[in-house]
Length: 137
Ligand SMILES: [Cu+2]
Image (cartoon, rainbow, N blue to C red; front, side, top):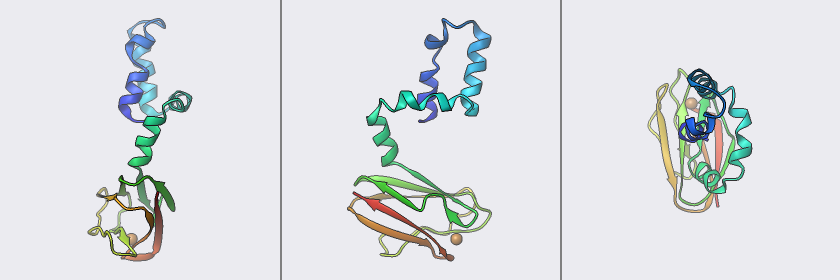
């Protein structure tokens, strides 16, 4: 689910029967804030192509000295992105040395495309207790 999908879901055409300008604006504001998004996954469940796209480009947050998802499974060719939300430098370093980020400052990100199937264990080279796994199928 991305902003464009949300925007099309609450397009003016869908909302026109409801009421005038004010309601459309209010509904859009709620969606933007995430208040209404809980109602939307049912619609997304019928769109496997878009789910696959999401699985092919997952994002992993780095927060509070941890990777937000300890294990992520992706298809071959997937691009995985890590975003550092800590106020501390971190790296994303593959145990098998197939990829290694520079130290990421707060707000910086690193992406890697996984072209070969396998299990990739990675860690932060500055804080080796921070670990994660990418499974490429
Ligand atoms: Cu670190």
